Image (cartoon, rainbow, N blue to C red):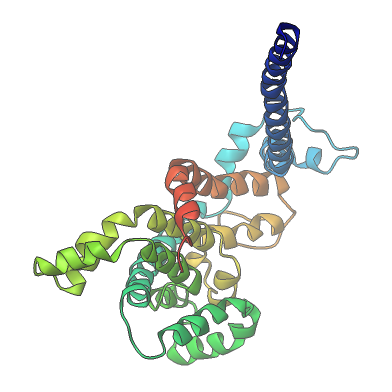
Length: 305
């Protein structure tokens, strides 16, 4: 090859190296732009609710609608939601139901997932498949039978129908999530602990549970959001306003409320928006705090089956 040919080859290689980073940065920039646009679009309803929570009642129903509040009533509206209804009591009820449900779901799902992942027993895969098949059943299918069972037990108008079922397995999804994570942990750790005299319960508590923090955090975050935002369950089983959860109490801001009694009245959409923002805050804070474990648990779960 002549000197001129080598020079042209070198120039072409340098040109390709220069073009490659440019294309790489353009591609990544387009991806970031699409993600940013998608995130902005998904935040529009939340932003609209937040801005509406600072408007006057007649301003919300104006047409054409106004995006920014003409009057800054944020402080007044957020103060009013605690006066118009027993909202603090409803939040306390939600905290009680969610915490007890979460403890039961994580504890029972961890034990069941451990048995599916580590113990050999007849029909293990069949039982696991049947357990997963319950995820295909809509909640409406089991709603009436469940209500009749809880009514026979005398649990209607109490927190028991919302809490007790979580202590019996914790849900098929949580079992699947934790079982798949247990399957990624080498059995060598179990065998090493057993050689030191550990029984299966000790192996579960001392060896496996500390290693499953990402999966447990993922199950806990999803369980918290599902239980905190549960509307159908409290609507079906709770009749006394003193036992309402925060999500169920939101509907009274649609009818209008007074501090003396929960009675029908003019709609108070501005208070509904303010109360909705308050109810959504715990889920948002939890997600941002547990985001690291949440993503790690989703990524590492299901690598081995």
